[in-house]
Every structure is written in C-alpha cells, then in structure tokens.
View 1 (cartoon, rainbow, N blue to C red):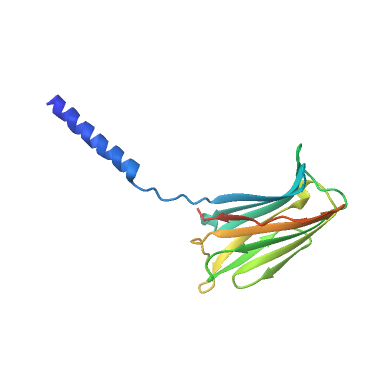
View 2 (view 1 turned 90 degrees about the vertical axis):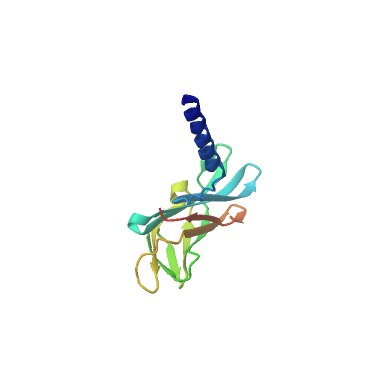
Length: 182
C-alpha cells in the first residue's frame, strides 16, 4: 500500500511539474519604466537623455521625469557654462479616446495640447549640474467621453534634447518610456 501511495504521489508531482513548465505565463507589465538614449560628443563624452514613467492605479496618475546630462569617463557631469539647450517631451497613449491632463515644475517650459497628446518645449540657458536639466511632472489620462480617469492604457513619455556649447550642436535620439498602471 505504501509503494502504491508513493507511486501515485510521484505521478501527481510529475503532472504538476509538467504543467508548470509548459503553461504559458502572462507577460508582466511594468508600473515604472526608464529608458536612456545618447549621442557621442567626442570619443570620451556623450550627451544622454533619460526618461522615466511611473503609473499608479490607485491615484489614477502617472509620474514622469526627464534628465539630460553629459557623460564622461569619470561619470555623469554637468554641462559647460555657455550651454544652450532645447528639450522636447511628448506624453501620449495608444488610445485616441484618452485626453492627458498634466502639471509640472519647470521654468522656461511651454505646453502644447492636442486631442491625443501633449508636447512640452523647455529651454535651458547656461550650464550647470545634471539636476538643472531635470524636470518632473504628473499626467492624468482622462476618458474623452466620461471625464473619468483611464487606467487601462499605458502612458508613453518620449523626450530628446538639443545641446549647443563651444563647437558642439547635437540632438539626442528620443528616449521613450512606457508604463502601464499597476
């Protein structure tokens, strides 16, 4: 009887193990996403653009931030004193029925709304540490028809920056983060 019970237990265990291995697992969606793009200035330095998006279902809000920096062999450094920068940041979703309300905390920034996205243009004068080239905001995806929050679509945040200083005039490729609500 004991051998028979052990045999049945082994068969049941083998079945469960097989099901665990062959059963597909749903892909995980990240509530927070960070992406970085860069363009070389010279063999030792590059300009980086970083974008982070974090969507919180309980608040119906997505937090986003962007940051530009100069990367050198010694790590992330600030831009030189004669720097001029022009950054473009776009917030959007893949659903045309979503309107994006927002707020942010950056000087020299203008927002341009359209029915499906919002574009921010920020101008930076003078160099400084990477913190000077960082800004944050909140987005509130809203349903056009009901006016209620939409937490069933991910927020996409894309940004690039043009940096000009002492013989350098470069624009980074877009860095795009996509965060689903969780």
